[in-house]
Length: 151
Image (cartoon, rainbow, N blue to C red):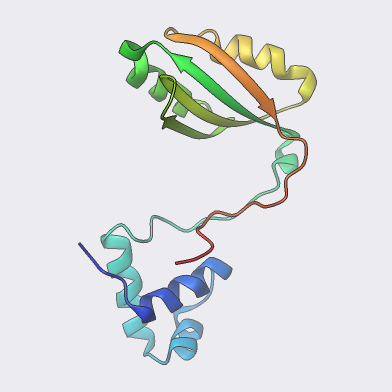
């Protein structure tokens, strides 16, 4: 498996702060050539260290003012089918299987608190294999990041 070194960590820290930073700017910071930086980044992508480059968007810009976490209990024989259906929903940002009860932790962005019941009925309870849904509405967000804060 690919092992990241101190220089890779420096590069990753710079990319975490600004995924659009140029190879030249990174090269200047880490004291390598632009080509060497590019090769390191490509190597980290190839080896699954860098999974992609993204942007954080305010969900309100898409009229999705309500952020909801669902814990969903699922029939164990339907896990894969349910996961695939949940993952296709464009309002869902995270589908993760967790320990404990057989099921998933799901993070969705919906239109409004008023539409929560309708969303659950149309998007969740309509999926065969879902046994129970517990919803937790996000009241206030103190931190949002798309990356680990320490490497």
